[in-house]
Image (cartoon, rainbow, N blue to C red):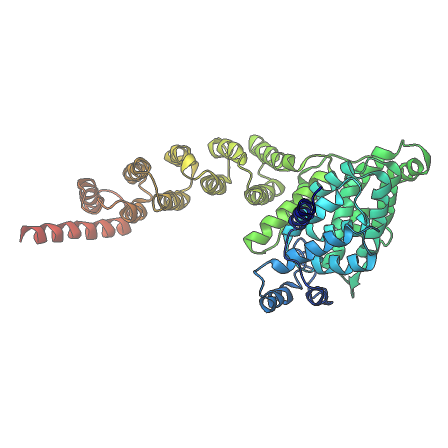
Length: 482
């Protein structure tokens, strides 16, 4: 090979290697500054958020180095790849420093790099990578556990579990740290998915080694399922789980009480936090009762509908319906609209108004016709409740980019409603005026005002309101006559 071709060959491979590593290439001094120790200041909750204690530090360094936003994390990823590509598979101390800096970056995009190294055919230092990866699993810890158990050989899984075990014993006084809870949740999900009896025993011992801190796993139905699954396994693991299975018995199917305690016990957090908590509860509940996460909301829906079919007016059923609808709403599952339509049309439903709100929110304009049809059946709602429903229908008409035919459908419905719903004529008059510019001076409104102001129908409040409407028309006619 001619020398010039050889130089070109080497240069090309250097470029390709740099491209594969990605990110900016820090100098030796920049490397040391990037890896300078930063103490975690993250609180314990919300545990599903990664620890971003280095975000501010990284932003300052990026500005000082003349880098773009996010380049500090990309540089850390590059350093990790370079270190692990070394002849000895990486210096453990150097890798530990890099991984700690990555963990405290709080940047979820690093999961692509971590997964690429962790799930490679022969990646070095997998236990260390696994420990850091637990900090980025968040509410998707079960999905990660499924992939991990199905992709990583048993021998390596054992090492990874052992490396993560010390993390769940880290505590800040009596409060378990965020990192401890992140590792704890991942190890629980790995236990649920584990296919090797000996490794399942290892995980169970890790998760119950200090019951004063980790009674959560000890009391979970998922542990009962795990014990039942491996009770007949050979060797010491089988004997271990057989003893647990005999102590706790067979796992029972869930009932309304279980759902209230484990699935629907939510406090007054902001909506975004409540939605994330619901996701967490759904995952835990699915694991506890041997189902998939997507089946949890279907179970809630079926149980809710059963209370309607049974016309169950007990306090337990009443509380359940209220909490279940809130839980279904937070699940944000598009298929829930099927159940909501059934509940909306049901002959007996003391929670119909809440169902109406949920369905209108979830289905939007697509569910308008069904909502209007049910709302037309006056006995299905109390008078005051109908008024609120009319308001919510009108709000749809005020949205951006509402098709003209939909707007016409809403205004026609509201004009019809004011003629048949004598309990809400005043309320509807204001609602229609807010969405229908032609209502204020329409012949329909004038005829209605003449009829209701005459004293033939309605109460004093209704007569007084429409007497004022009559005067409005009189003033309009006088103005137009000039």
